[in-house]
Length: 138
Image (cartoon, rainbow, N blue to C red; front, side, top):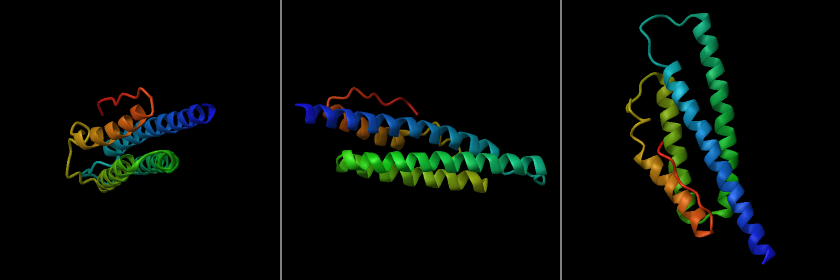
């Protein structure tokens, strides 16, 4: 009994950490989109400093997300692993578009069905192990 309880607690903690770090990623993506928008005027020193600060914040959030993802791969099933890989690919694509100033999907924040589906798979995996994890609308 103790072994099963301990495994459940570890899985719960890992999945909650993953969801928390995804929230940080989502925030950083929104800030990056606003900061790196293509402008018709030259970039000044102040703007360049802001972009560097945002890029540093993004890199820290991405590293934390990847660490949480790595831990979650140890305790999750194949559907969650696939959902996380898809989620990371989407995140990377959006980040690259944001920094280039050329968003192919300017409404990425509103059009979140694929991210919702990925988070739902993570939540389902948690629910199957007795967790009550509800995905929030992204």
